[in-house]
Image 1 (cartoon, rainbow, N blue to C red):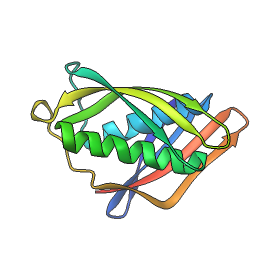
Image 2 (tube, rainbow, N blue to C red):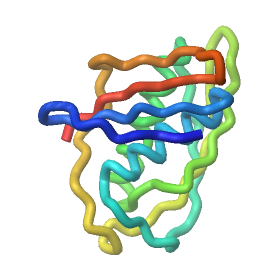
Image 3 (tube, helix red, strand yellow):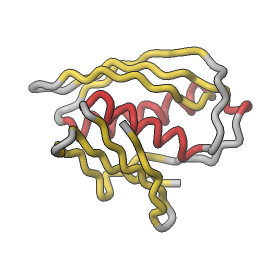
Length: 135
């Protein structure tokens, strides 16, 4: 799995890949974490979350939105992501992240995930996600 941060006018985008949908969601979330700051300490406690949506694309959007919500509510930068996606009529996921106290990082604010140019697609080697974040 991997991700690349892509300059995007006043926003920032994450272009992520993974062999499975799980790894692609994890790589996209890792890109969101990296968009906040360059260096992330190994501190913090894990927390879990569950998300369901009407499509895989909506599930990715809602998952990333939940990470931003958890950041704001808990005062932590979610990192070290673990995701298990259940595909089907109503896709869902179980995930966890390690929450690093925002006071321990020099983070820029990511305001929101957007549907602008969003893509989630199968590739010959697995999956690819492209997501733009409002900064």
